[in-house]
Amino acid sequence: MLEQERRWKHQVEPRQPIDPTMPRELPVMQLSQVLIGTIVWWLESEKSYTPRQIATWFCRFAFYGYLSALGYETPTPWKE
Image 1 (cartoon, rainbow, N blue to C red):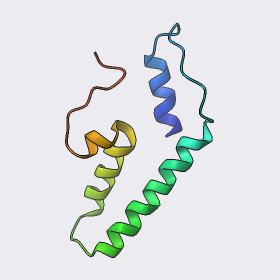
Image 2: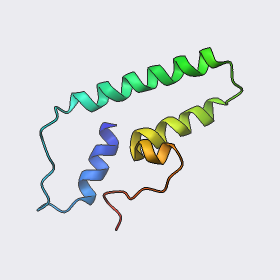
Image 3: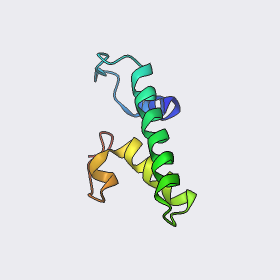
């Protein structure tokens, strides 16, 4: 997460402020909880999803959001 943030910051123009209202640790904690919940769901669901599928779905949700995870094309802040 923090590496993705560093890459994203380099793509944002310096004059564009990044809203500092959320503590840096909070998003990492939130996504950690989502990851744990995803793993628990996967193990308990007894579905035949591969680890790669689960990882792909988690990353899509983590980096592109809820709507993207549902399969909708969503705009990203660094692409116009």
